[in-house]
Length: 227
Image (cartoon, rainbow, N blue to C red; front, top):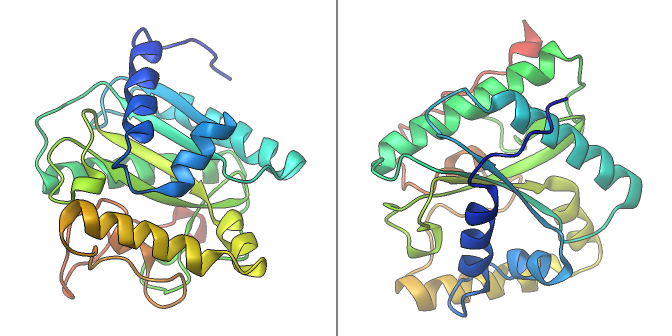
């Protein structure tokens, strides 16, 4: 595995930590991870390049294994890219799914099983991504997002563990946490994000990039492990 550190690692990590700690940032889960020291950041070069994909996948495998071992709640893994800062919402969405496809293909090539608790079909309401046998939900952030909650100085992909959402549901904490995030998002943007849906109600793939999409939108991801 590759362990070298990107030259901008410390700067990109500090940028994200400052952003999450801002009083108006709505995601209380990310704030909890930051407070607990479990918000992990990997600094990378460009979101529209495959240059860092092996490093990212290495880190995802390690992150998944560490979670299975200790089950620490409120863990998040954020990949912060140093650019480009000029991508439109559609361009960011395209780059995000290119990275997702590349990372998933590496998961297949390395013999990792897809998390059986979720579906690899992006049209399925139970869809989630899977890396190292653990299901993940992705949140995209970038400078030109139309949603203030998704606006950040650098293109970013935040990988959140599906199992943590299920544990929150089992503990009866999920709905109150979700509502708190929605209220904070509405206070920031003036409206609630129309793309948000509960897992199992609609495919979460529509939420990843943060761009509002219509019923005709089709996810470009294809799980190659079925071939």
